[in-house]
Image (cartoon, rainbow, N blue to C red; front, side):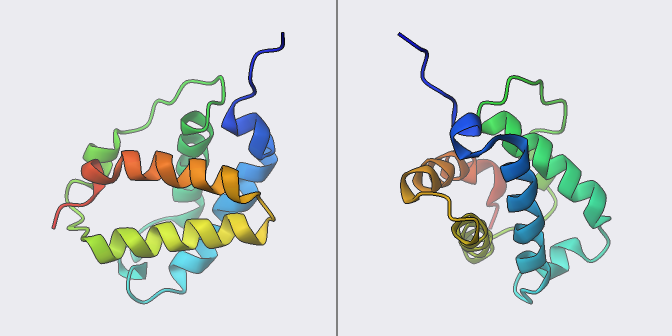
Length: 121
């Protein structure tokens, strides 16, 4: 019996993660309700970090050496509406890439698992 594939493998590997993050940030940067969080951010660097985090969170067999979600978002004053906007853009990016709904649901479940470390207000 073959071991079950990780979400990372089922979603399409690093190519899919790369494409998702690229589409995601184009949506985030166009959204006036949350783009101010990235006003002083080097987006290419941020996208690289996000790609590494998502690959790790989805089960890629690589180590993640970035900051914890709590530490990375500690001074950002993110509220429920901000978090929902980010989730909406992530879902939309996955949808644009024709990711099946059951896999999108798994991604959302992972994102909701770190919500408490991100939302502060």
